[in-house]
Image 1 (cartoon, rainbow, N blue to C red):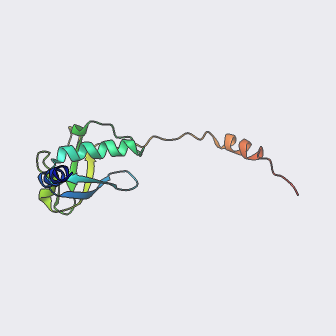
Image 2: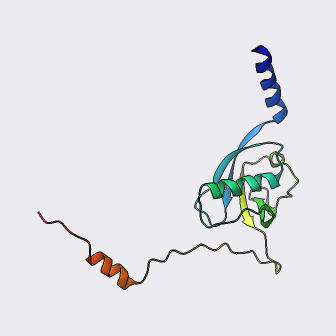
Image 3: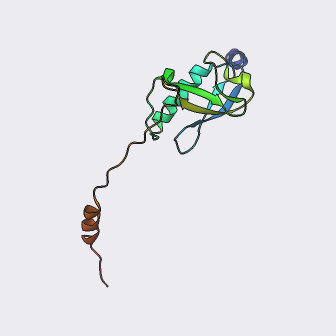
Length: 135
């Protein structure tokens, strides 16, 4: 029992510090929060953020290719972070996930899927069909 406990302590020291980070996706309602290792590369954080975003069923739908996105740190600067740098090297915990700019240099817009509610006539007819119970 002592040997197993000792191995667990060594594994946690090798893994490094763990950080709770917030990743705000441009066009989404709020940030995604998850725990990462301090030495984890930025590309892995982007991948984890996209998987968490999809698992939560958030909109707009982004896709799963982490090469189409960049991670920015508003506190450090507006430039995209290098995908091979470690996330703990910046000293911050709040990041922003954006689509990579298109070939013309303009940022790619994230489109929201629209829900179709029909015409106003359909809504009106449905509202008239509501049964109101009388006393």
